[in-house]
Amino acid sequence: MAQVSQYLDLASQARHLDLVACGKDFPELSGSHARGPRPRENFQSLSIIVTRNDTNLSVLFDVLTLPSLTHLTVTSNEFWLSLEYQAIEVVALLQQLLSLTDFTIHEIEIRAGDRMEFSKIIAFPITERFFDSFIINHATPSSVLLPRLKELDLRSSAPSFPTISFLRMVQSRWIPDVEDASRIGVDCLTSITLRRLEFGDHGKEMEIQLQALKKAGLRAVVL
Image (cartoon, rainbow, N blue to C red; front, side, top):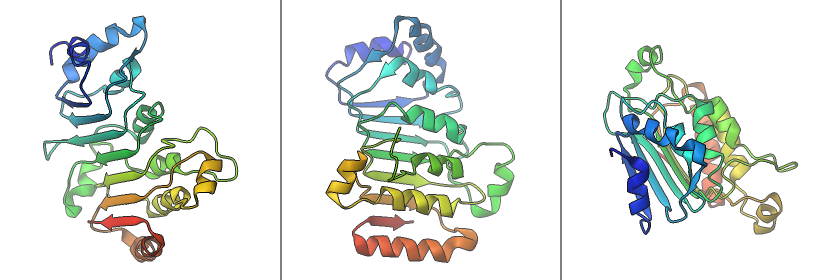
């Protein structure tokens, strides 16, 4: 994609957008930022496949406004590449996506025995801070991240998994009562998929809590 914005202008009727290996083209987008964000009402689904050149994906969201986006996938197509973004950067990308209902974020797939070594050289975005940003305070709901979120698909490869924060996030977004959800101003989380094989000392607690939520109606899958 030599000139990203020009291609987007031509795709005025497109509903789905795939961005692959666009890192070198984001400066072109950044240069147009002075003209203000470009609303793209037509896009409902966006897939970002990260490669080694994609060091500043936030530029895309700085320049483009995607008010109708309902599905977002961020992943990597090369096994040795990581999503080299801190949790705070990923959260910043999501703040304007008020219509998003389905979010998938997959970290690089790493064998359990290699995770500690990889953690010395790459950043893993799925952290305690990441999940804390998704937690909804039912008493004083304000500035809720992804208020329309219904389905969340995660692949975590960090050496340790923030089980407690993850469970708090899921429980805070499990709001099956329609009136409660309306009062808070969010949609109920209906599906959670977590791709991780082990959870350390809190594995049993994870199993118990998710099993209880599944009995209540949440679709919860751990792979």
